[in-house]
Image 1: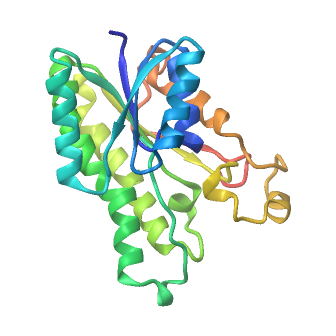
Image 2: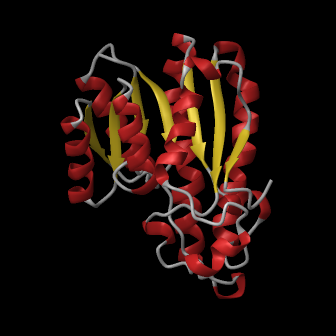
Length: 243
């Protein structure tokens, strides 16, 4: 089997674009999704139609037991195969001013966007270390770099992943496992469809929202051997909005 890449939240938006891009380059892609089975099937269908290979892997990344069971089941069914590339992409937004954020809005965002990094990365890291090769790419956000009003929960989660990226890179570099983060700005996806693009793009030097495929190209580079000497970095892709 080709090198195996697991993309969380791989059925839509940025995750879908990454799955399609990596599959086009010969990677075998595991498309994680939670509940939207139709979108996941359509993503896998698009990959197969372009000559790529992959499979669906349904589990809730915010649930540690469900995550562990799903990965263990996949390993049992694919003895000898290793997941060498992990793209921690899945995330949710539940925006509100902090004074109005309810506990469930806080915990849901933290569990899905931050705690899932621990649940999943820890489970896959041992094989990467033993194999002396691995790529971990964390999709973070402009919100985690500069903070965004109305997104204290989301900013906290993404900021935590940025710090974790830098720390983990220090731990695993000697085993040839690299850990990097990609920080998109405003990208045209389901998650940003409720935003006022016409007004917001005025503050972006390139005067437009980004495309999911543009994020996928950056991820593709970071998982390749061309990026062997890059680790612990947070690379912005935001049209010049924040540097």
